[in-house]
View: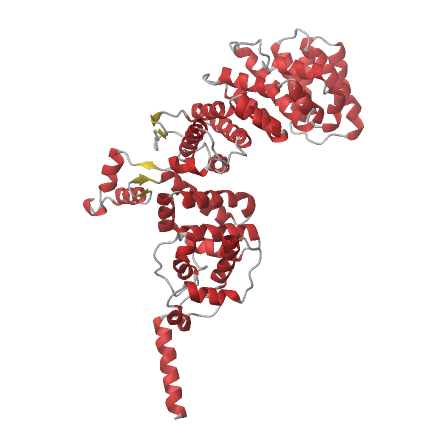
Amino acid sequence: MDEERALYIVRAGEAGAIERVLRDYSDKHRATFKFEPTDEDKRKKLCEGIFKVLVKDVPTTCQVSCLEVLRILSRDKKILVPVTTKENMQILLRLAKLNELDDSLEKVSEFPVIVESLKCLCNIVFNSQMAQQLSLELNLAAKLCNLLRKCKDRKFINDIKCFDLRLLFVLSLLHTDIRSQLRYELQGLPLLTQILESAFSIKWTDEYESAIDHNGPPLSPQETDCAIEALKALFNVTVDSWKVHKESDSHQFRVMAAVLRHCLLIVGPTEDKTEELHSNAVNLLSNVPVSCLDVLICPLTHEETTHEATTLDELPSDKTAEKETVLKNNTMVYNGMNMEAIHVLLNFMEKRIDKGSSYREGLTPVLSLLTECSRAHRNIRKYLKDQVLPPLRDVTNRPEVGSTVRNKLVRLMTHVDLGVKQIAAEFLFVLCKERGRLNSLCPLLGYFSEGVCKIILIILAISFHSSEVTSPSYIELYQGMCPGWERVAPLTLPDTGCILALYYIVRSYSTNQERGRDQG
């Protein structure tokens, strides 16, 4: 009934009546995502009627109402077949200011029309294969980049940038050819990186270092959404960028990695938004060539060096809070390098482990990133080893029991997902300098525990590219890689990996001695 009334007014009414009826329809169906099949034909005709109104000279408010209803109707894939034509797509491109003839974004009154047009295009392109083909024919990616350049240095138009970036993400997701066009022809990598710089208001202090204000306000919701969409679009553009062949490419990836370091050190308006922002940054860092990830750490500034030299003993005993701050800062420094970004990645990884679900999607990207960083950059590896595998002090508890990062990673050794199990094993393996230091890894994971036996088998498969290693072989392997194992084995609880406490060892020895005397 709603469609019939709206269609009647759209066909015969004047602009004011059309605006009112479509606003009512929009308010009623704003949260509608499933539509009645019986009204499908009416919705198709309503879409066609709306496009006819949009080509007329109607007020901006009427255009916005038309586009809002069109956006709602475009959620239904079935009605898009007859209305997705080249002519209708060009109408939306014109309203979204995506034509090359439109040189500026001066009229603020037109911004709502631009935003709603981009929203409609997002839905239509995502839901219609015909629209996807027309997007290639109309060179939509180039038009979107052109609009981004107009928005680049402009404030208060984050909504336009956000939906422009979302449409760019959708296009590059659905068409691999567009990724190549964006990367090379349209210079999408520097363009999108500059969009991120603008969203984060970055001020450079060196070629690959930015000023971080830890006491500054969080990102606004609009800036956060814009940054997330830019990160997603950049991920598609760089998805095949494992190797760098040109010096200019290397420089651009280093700039992007420096921007992502800044991203990791700031917060969004809410905890959930911060996690989403950091999650997308982690995904994008996985596409950065590992040789360019050295910019995640940087030498301490003179002020930071002076602060780091301050010892806890020099502080008055009543300044507990200040002591805690100094201690916290010292844990983010290693060998004269600022490790804040790596510390954030480590905390992010631990939070994902604590979630206890969706490990393959949520945990493996950050675990893989930390593994590759550790493998390629010595300072990162040694810092992470200090944080994840500190000197072993407690040998009386099972290695998987506890709340430390080491305990949590050892628990992953028995996870049902082989991919999760393997990447956790590889991370620990790399922290111990791979095969050369496996003898230091075994005690940290527990002598003869189920976890250490499995990690040895997994490491063998990784090292020798073997998909299968026979289980009985791990004992001989262990004996060869752990000098002095004979001294530890008698003191080790079977299948747990923890060493008996001295009290129980002495008691066991005394009991055996008494039994010997009784039998004598």
